[in-house]
Image (tube, rainbow, N blue to C red; front, side):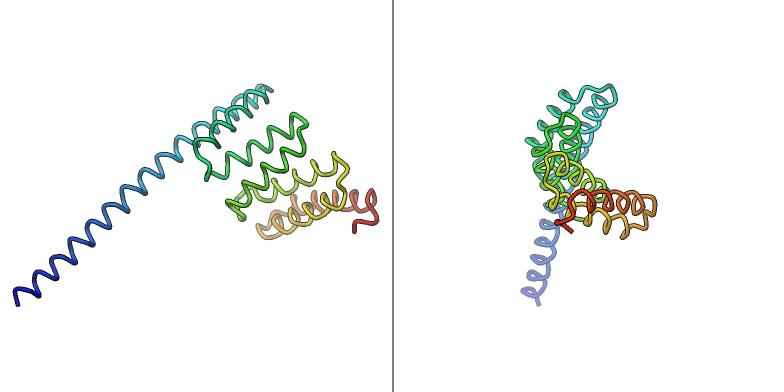
Length: 164
């Protein structure tokens, strides 16, 4: 009976140790992402005053420090697009969406990727991204977004008739 109690006690201790490690690592992870959110917000503040260079520098710093935080990449994509660095913007959006395919701003990211691809003359790619945006808007029942993406899809389809 004594060995049974010891085995039970060991199991309980292992469970407590595991729980403690898990709980503390989760807390640290959340705190890190809070810091990442604060950095992203400071970048957005630069954007509001039209300082896209400074904003993108903040986003790059956030990405370097928190490479698994998708919002950093999505915001970087927006900043780079505003700076007319369309290829880099598409790459940033892709990285963010790879980390979080169903991100709450996936539709906007795909839409912006489409605009960037169109700006660099990549019609077929622009249409592919726009169809993904249209699906993402549809999935979240965002009817104004569906209308906007559908209207732009018509424009792109006329502009790039072979890409349909």
